[in-house]
Length: 320
Image (tube, rainbow, N blue to C red; front, top):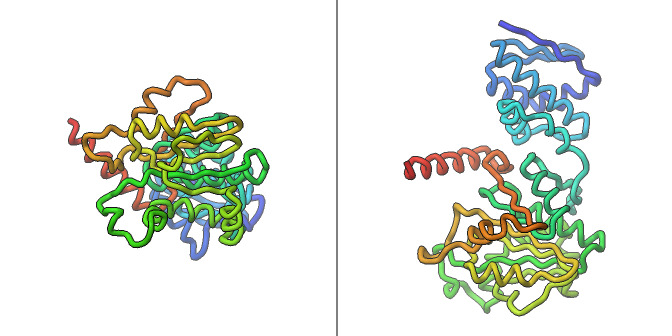
């Protein structure tokens, strides 16, 4: 049986760490099989020596996040714990530094994992970035946040968001309305992210002025996109020809972010994903960066991580 004591500079840090009805600390106790108690300005951790050592590292890292103004919740507790298990928690406190932009609800949009931070940094430093990984890793949302940041700083004059209108089990023809009405459901996640950043009224004004454009990928053909921040979402559903067409739309003073999940390809079996092709062909081209996310970067419900892991294990077993 081992015990360690962590001294607190501020008693309020303990309240933030323990959470409402001790929900945060209960999660840590279950995670490591230890007992964590608050005694005034001290936190005492007792249990198996190895587990106590890991729990101490997790608690100290969480306290450092609290000092930087972070709210502790299930997502960042699980992430900190996974980094402690890998002995890679040194850079986690950097996640609390700064932010990308603020939503209309007053929430600061920032990277929540090291994978997300690497992605955001890559977008800042490179002209073209490919963000590839599973659902729930913030690929699209963070790209839109970076686009809004650049737009508000007058670094670009236009935000262009596009997706291939690939059918996933349902036919476009069965949807009501004209072509725009039919493709709008495919573009909904992009609209939602922009509503968050701008608010519905400001978003509508920018759409009317043409400074924000949300359109199917087919609408990009024949254009040169200058002074723009361009995002191609769901790029795993592009063909080789489509992604080449998109990449060659790049104009002066523009950035491109291409996002996709190569485990969710909805193309016919005979078609190879343009995203997979582009990742292979462009991997050594200067000023193009490929950022890969893993299940550790998932910032949705814990079950999403578990589902992704289960599918990855199943695919691995099929290959062997």
